[in-house]
Image (cartoon, rainbow, N blue to C red):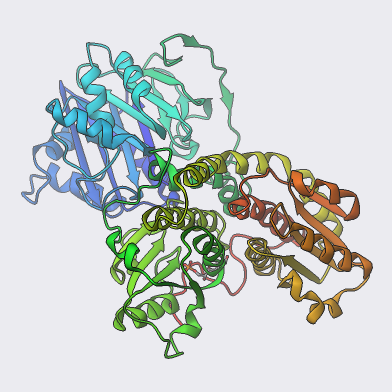
Length: 626
Ligand code: F6R
């Protein structure tokens, strides 16, 4: 996820901004930049790569090198500016390039902004602003904010930001500054995090506390929908209509390590809690029409290919394979296209029957998994079109495919995939719906309903995270010493069971098995003993009654049934050892919600076993070897 930092005060802003950006490096980024105001000038310097590239550019230009950033960099490097903004970018809209790096600015170079998140209606705004004479220089959605604020500017930056904010749709946070108000920063938040750091005669704002923790521990949280005006002498919080809001200050007592994890004890827990936001980012502007799906974006597969496709083959490994399994149900149901699932390491050595008319989808959060890349290459050489679903711009998979659909989970540090998984599933849902639209296999009203349900996913994830903590902790307490867990599911509940079992196995080192519930009596039932915990995905679906019968079979063997339920399956609560209710959503979309308690269960058990959940033994985040 991108990082924001802003400073207004009395000390040289350049050093403070660079130091702040360094503290946000753990979030992952591919380019960075800063803008500073001094002596009636506002200048930006941006660089692709890590912060040393930005520093080198500032240094080189200050020393008078002719290599390129122009006068702006010279000025930025040389001026003793005490107001500025900085950004680390993780590309989502537009390539990794200097033009796409932040800060962005308006045509007259008066207003500079740094932005996190997504502006969903940027195309509409960009068209209007371009018609009115704005000159856009990047491929990003973020740039529109600078032009929009400039178009509203009438002598007061805060008023211009409020007017712009009212027009923006999406979920984002930004900080703006104007050369005409050199001692002011104005920030705004819709969903994406922002926090103020208070000092004496100086103020900080950032997307996360580590950016200013070395300078101040006095913070004020920016809430959703708020505008914040920062000046050296103080900070004002406002509503979008300009009414003042009182905000308490708080002291943070985190050490740097905890601060990097946003106050969570591990990256994995932080990433589990980021899932609502990351799913929102992944679907955001792609469902902006409200009734359909728009995947026409830079690097996307030519949609004409979708219409002529006869068959889809998904190749992936591990958790990404589970995401594909869910996608298979959705694509077959919605787009009425046959989907074959292939474990990449098997497929590549199988002399597969594949060629023209096939669309092969490679799913890989890292974009570097050797087996997935090899399977995709095999298919491409034989004439299939290849689509990549990945989280990393510029990764190898993006170069080995005919088109890419990016997930927007931000950097995932925990080795066990969590937020990248739910975003992969969200991306495949988008693809399935778009295929259905293009092929006319679902009525438009059904597509509109499903798009509406997709929009509810982030809220359902939030609700789940807020409600399942206590039952999950209790199950973990009761079962963390057990040496075997069985997971059962049917239909889309099966990949959820598989993923839950994989999570527990990889971070707690407990042996797990996951089965299609209907297969239980063909073998695994022999494993059931008196205390065997059996985790059953029993959310509402056309196969719920079948699932309930399987659970009764499990109980009859004395095993402990732990069930993930929704309102429709609430009646089974008294028949199971423990039920974990989650909010109901269209049953095809339920996996994204149902998997959350299983991630947390794995986490809580591993924690009780005293294990390093972020770096489980023998596992690597990126598997670039066979
Ligand atoms: C499990 C996990 C692995 C990966 C697998 C594929 O938590 O992270 O199973 O899913 O190694 O990795 P990517 O998605 O990078 O291809």
